[in-house]
Length: 98
Image (cartoon, rainbow, N blue to C red; front, side):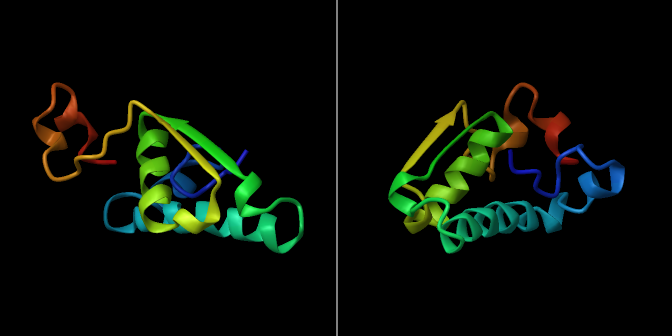
């Protein structure tokens, strides 16, 4: 389980650390975890698979497009990939703070 910044695991400050203009931190955290797993010999990129849904699906899409060499398989369930127009979706306006 990768507890990256932006999640609620460690309280409100941890969650706020990756909101809005700092969202990139969550993606960098996830890539750093994958890099560390490979560097320590726990796995190889070819054997490392990741999966996420909804906001985690967006995370998977970012991993696939920004860090494709880190993963052998990427599964993205219901990803919200259109970040230019998401606020026009049914519940999109409620996601602006994230």
